Length: 305
Image 1 (cartoon, one colour):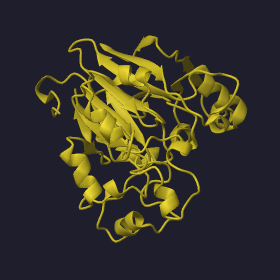
Image 2: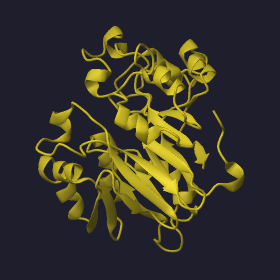
Image 3: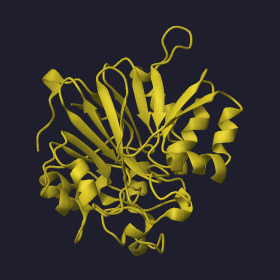
Image 4: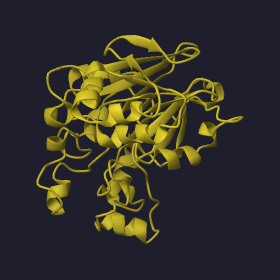
């Protein structure tokens, strides 16, 4: 797999947070990975979010995690300019998960906040929780509807298209609307033709999803669990990774095996659960990922396409 097109890059992505919900370490967990982080043998990771730009002046967040304030402070590209002028243009949501939306409340000091979300996600945030109404008490919220399959512009030369990600987690993502409960985003730079796909939550790589991924210069994909029964084996949960809506990396039908056969320039795992052994740099599971030509994201990783 190639390492990108840094010499002629026209699209930039910054990984603000590379861990799944709860971060790493998770406050109530003493698993081997969390213990290693607390012993400072492994870097800590904040909760999943990225920032994308076509000019390094205006940035779009994909998801707003509960760690968004710290993530912004860690990235000078998102620091305010004179007075309170901010380079943060908008927030795009992949779903209505708390880990991806609670950060909106921490952005309430904005003069106005532009949020891109599907009707299904908007409905869940408006009807299924008090998040949207609470936010609107502090600042105006401009909702931009996202229609899966339809392109929309994000600044000079940068276009975005959401695509449906099938999920069985209807109770958490709302009912009544079949499409758009969970989406991924495919971003294309109209100047270079470079494409980047952000897919932090995926339950199965269906033929339709594989078609969205195929041929992209860079893929950032769900790396929640290494094995399907990871949490069960550790005695931390009764559900498998797939039952929680996340395709495991290893095993039959896992993402590692499926991605090997796909035309992807660069593949990077994001949204890793705090229990995932690939977070340990000397773990055999980490070596398997890297020997397969794939990468494990860190907070602060920058990708150029």
